[in-house]
Structures are given as C-alpha cells and as structure tokens.
Amino acid sequence: MNLVELNSVLINYLRNNVPNPHGSGNFIYVDYPRRDATFPRISLTQTGGELRPVAIGEKTESSKYGKLASILFDIDIWVKINDRAIFDNETYVGTKLRDYLASKVIEVLEEGKETLKANHGILDIEILGTYSHPLDEENQLHRKTISIRVSFLWERG
Image (cartoon, rainbow, N blue to C red; front, top):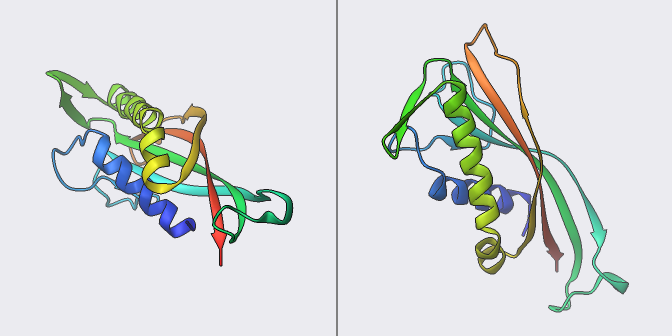
C-alpha cells in the first residue's frame, strides 16, 4: 500500500460507515473545504509520518523489502452554526451535530479495525486525541479535529 491508496481506503471506509447528514452524496473529502463548500463536511489530511525497518534486512514474508509505516492524519469535522440533521429521530444542531459526527468517526474507526486489517492490510488505527477549535466567526463554522495514526506495511518490489 502507498499513501494515495491509504487515503482512498480511509475516505471510502468513512463514507460507507459514518451517517450522512445530507442523506445522500459525499460529504467526506481529502481536503480542507473552500468557503463555498457544502456543510457539514469532514476532511482527511495527512499531517506527518515515519517509516521504520520491519525486521533484520527489512525482508517481509512476501520477500519484498518492507517498512512499517506510521502515518498521521487529522480528520476535521466542519459544521455551520445553523446546520442541522436528524439521526434516529433526534435533531442535532451546531456543536451538537459536530460532536455527534466526531463520535461516529471515532466509533467506526475503532469498530472497523479488523475489517481494515483483513481487507486492506492496515495493522492499526490509533486515536491520538481530539480538539475542538474556537468558533470561526467570519465563516460561522464549528470545527473539531480528531488526530489518528495509521500503521501498515509499506512494501516495495
């Protein structure tokens, strides 16, 4: 797996498992939203990472040379002040909607570890922390960041 594939796997997994406040269409992207974007929105951004040897001589079972990749991501949940959505007959607005979506992101990542390992070779996803940003008054946006570390085997021929 490489970084582009990893982005795609994570975006598709989140899109398929986090409840969509719009009902249909995509609201999860690899980017920070433009001002004219539709909200609520979730963005996934690589923020760093490292590669370490897997073993002596860096040989893996497939006899390719491999490294253990630990890639850091920020997942940002963006919600306008008056955005609202209904999930399970409960209405969520503003920060309550932001926090609900953040909780769902964390839940699906935690619950999906085995699936992501079996289907995509992701060894682990660690939730490193969450941070609520102050209100962006100019754009009327609430934002919460979830920082994660994704570990997988980076192989090359």
